[in-house]
Image (cartoon, rainbow, N blue to C red; front, side, top):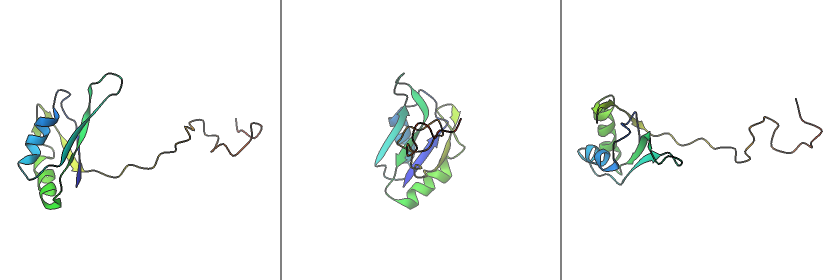
Length: 104
């Protein structure tokens, strides 16, 4: 099960998170998301546990608990929504219209 962990202390390390989750079972991977420009933690991450029962126990035990000085949120990760890869932020549609058919 992929687990989402939010409200992490910005100084929390992946090894700290792994130690906390290993109390409940096997941990396949831990990833704290870092800002690509500053290299600093964004304050959230993901933990992958192969056994769903152990993962659910970790979620139940660690959600809304103080960890590394912050009250963290722990829940089952939801799949990412599909993103529009066209980079369309102007609301003009997917490029099927010509330049004279834009809505202003």
